[in-house]
Length: 409
Image 1: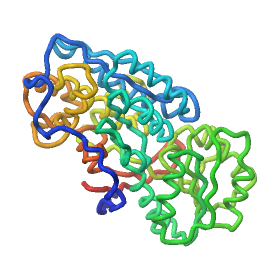
Image 2: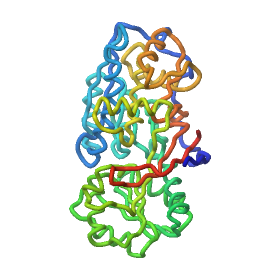
Image 3: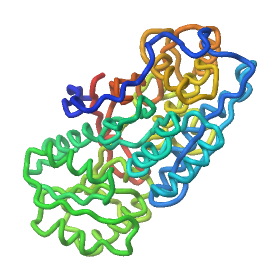
């Protein structure tokens, strides 16, 4: 089932970052870039820490365009380097500094909003390096004073909060809810977005710290008034313990709604429950290149593409095309060509024709990249103009999509 609703006004009125570049006009050298050069690109993902189980597949999605383009285009080579944020802001800052010092003009990442906001403010923006997060969804990202250097391929949680509220009202039939959220920018912003959108009452909002040995007291506080629905906003490593504690001591069958950070097919097995009372919301892949990407990912890595992997692919693909158009590994030049290669007008290319897109850019042709996750059209803040969400559930085989909701499509 696919439902279409209008893009919320929640994204309007936010400080404009002013992404630079005219759609369809390739900049840099004036002829669409130059051949005989190495295009460099950094990847910054949580290979360890609370988000490791989903961070490593996202990393693979980000690296896939580079693997596909190796030896595919005459006269141009592609080089990448991966840094581990450890799902920690300070570790992310250190890893980002390493990539910046190595001369990478653009980076896919970071993943989590709590890391992305700090890395963007302290490393990427001051050093004029383009950052394109595939999974940082906090509304804070939209309003960063970034001089046009910060982009992202997933939607803002200003939208996801509305989706969660709609699920609670329409699918669950809840008139009151409680919220447990990880105590960082991602958790706080998404909790606020849901609370502001939900038509019923919110009995409790309970913050928790990552990777604790017990969440019993937090669950007691959240469930004290027996809400119709419990919203849990967090990451897999913490989610495992939260749900173990819930099913051990608090399992009343209350409907639980989780978010993208907990969309992990291994979660039921780790928890030791089928989690049949849990549904979730997450940005979904619905771009024109979705099927080709998913097949390519499975062929390359031997596993199914997971949450935010398609957004990671698109983040890297657009950055590489902008770099080729720029003709140099310079962050400001890459920034100035992001809109040009991604937004209409221009000849359509996608994941299946990525090498041909590079060749078209080298020839000075106007292109329009449409990706695996979406059409990848940036707005003035570097956010996506059209996105899709899925409503998912956990099954014996992993995760299954129940329905989708479109914004701006």
